[in-house]
Image (cartoon, rainbow, N blue to C red; front, top):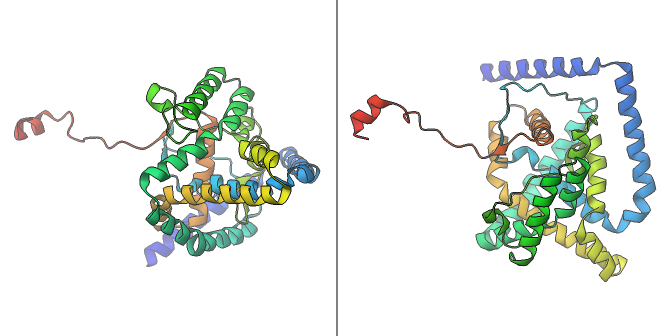
Length: 316
């Protein structure tokens, strides 16, 4: 117990020193961040009337894409063991309170719902639902690819969308991966980061989860590109559109939460400070995606693969 308490104290001390170093940035850098934050708020105010029918879908989709990013079962293959992250958390007190709220909502509301969903829904159906929603992200991928001038990747994503939407039955089956058309995760926030736009302060939104000023603005663009919103707004009245988009987004959230159930539990059990674990994992993953580092499931290496004595002993 004493050792654990001492480790926790040292870890918190290190965290405070790191955050203190970030707080000593130049006045010009702070001014830029504040100006970007002001522009973000102004953009939200100006765009709110036009995107109001999509707000339920926006909030739920943001939750599905951000809340669980910290517990992704994949890991980052970094080029160096120690990654220096430029983490700015000037609102840590507020962020920790909101993080606590989100965690309780996940434990006592979303997790039981996803457990029940997982119990009644066959694995094949869940895989199809996951593929369907991933296929709908094509406009977001395409715009991000073009902004980053990744034209070959844009063609690859276009090929994936065409193949999966036709041969793959509206995206329910990921046929494209079997013909060499791989998915590359992209969004507008990553495109901004690719061109050097700083992340800005770390923010934890109620119900939405971890984000930054840059990624929050990028998500507004991604929401405008979502084809579900287009289709529903054209086919239904305003009230019906809100109900339909909320329902569709709810299924997406529950499916993604089900996919990450084991990873979330492992993250909770393994972390000394759950808040800092989520924060660090979020920044590392975003940095890896911006720099196009490979993110994959780690493969276990055989420690005796090149051991001749071991082979001779066991006749291999």
